[in-house]
Length: 144
Image 1 (cartoon, rainbow, N blue to C red):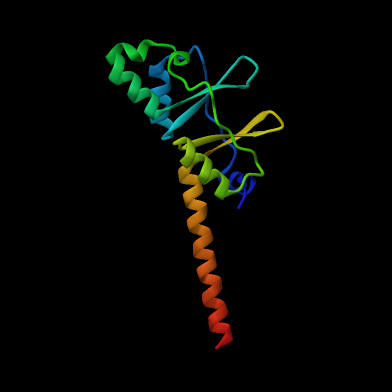
Image 2: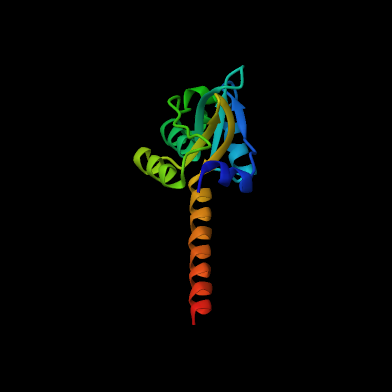
């Protein structure tokens, strides 16, 4: 199953923020939207970084309450791993495992087109396994 298939069913909603937004506003967005990461974009709408719940927690642990006043540029991961619409779920799982990340922005022709989380990958993998099992049962029942 490819990233394009997952996005087709999931949708292409993308939550982004600016580098000048505060860590507090990012934390609020993460909580309100019930998501694990926000893509940080530059003035041209290109990926400048990503901030995950993990980044916020680490910053809070290090700086305490004053962390919430920082600009998100101070805590974002700048070297963002991305995937393409043609990547397979196997490639996604390998990339996420190898880089110890749970979110991958999807880029097509240099443009941000979606976000895939480990939850999305697991959900679609389980559905594929269930489909395979149902197909096998139907085949066995038909052969009897």
